[in-house]
Image (cartoon, rainbow, N blue to C red; front, side, top):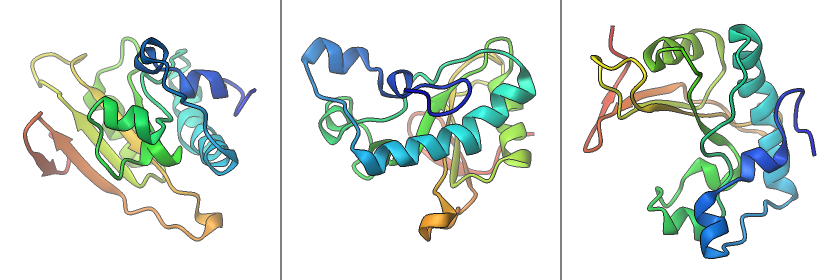
Length: 154
């Protein structure tokens, strides 16, 4: 099932851990709606701007999968509102700055980034659908594996 021009439900629900451990990672209708919004409001504009195919490394996570991998208990991945992404050949810091400037996001986290290794880490980005009464916080963070800091480097 296509969620947007370049993203499918299957790719936003794929998980090697879920497959290996036989964990059901099937979203319900509300979560599919959230994934559709995420795909169109966040993932597609990035894909169109960079014109480079990519697939999120993590999208939807069932509560059981999220707990198994040690995800945050209230992770927006479980609601279908978040994805972890990287764009081949694009610095994760540059991608984070582009998202910050062009996307209406709830949370943007540059995770495990090393300034000396532009391809290090990944971007966690989430959004809530304002038509469902939510509002995006535009929370921008860097996570180094032990603590969070506000803002982006540079």
